[in-house]
Amino acid sequence: MTDDFETLRVDRPAEYIEVVTLNRPNAANALNTQMGRDLVAYFEALSLDPGRARCVILTGAGDKCFCAGGDLKERRGMTVETWSAQHLIFERMARAIVNCPVPVIAAVNGAAFGGGCEIAAACDFIFASESARFALTEVTLGIIPGAGGTQTLARAIGTRRAKELILTGRPFSAAEAQEWGLVNEVRPAAELLDATIAVALHIASNAPLAARQAKQAISRGAEMSLSDAMAFEIEAYNRLVSTEDRVEGIEAFNQKRRPVFKGQ
Image (cartoon, rainbow, N blue to C red; front, side):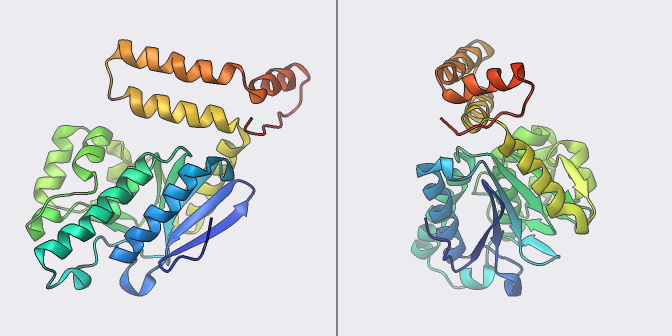
């Protein structure tokens, strides 16, 4: 796994925690073709080696923008064929984030507009700074959200509110996003990353195989009938019974000590 990305910075503030920073600060961290490729490369590599990390934090460089959306300067004058080829990369990027086996937290440190909002919504949950703002502005440009936004937003805040926001394209605040269920927690900007890392550390201290199975059961089960989802849950549960981590968790509890999980 390489950390040599043109548009991303990967840091490891603690064992099993990776902070991925969208790193185009001079362009408001706008999503260009290279950033799409870099995000695909990062998340697909992690899917092939999920034991490398137990939690990922996705944030933006600087203190004003998480991601301003698609890079419209790059897109200006694109042919239909070039536009479509670029969008295939963005579609694969969104799926790579959604399908990542490792928990992914968005730390939204500023504006998350268009594709930036979609990237945040593709994560498992969101912490945001008090100054963060969100919007899906695609209809104002003659298109619609195409990196999962019509689906992830509706699942987070309900179809009626999602229709209002997507059809108007109007921005909304971090406080509104929290009230509606898109954002889990709002923090002062200076505290955002530390607070998100603290939650990531809490996740990373738990059994990693269990965290991955729980994530999958929640995500996939949400799209099933209750009966099918409960059956899927049991399949995910049964995969953990034979693991060393399950044995370690029970032994640590009875010995009144912290468990040492190895992801085995």
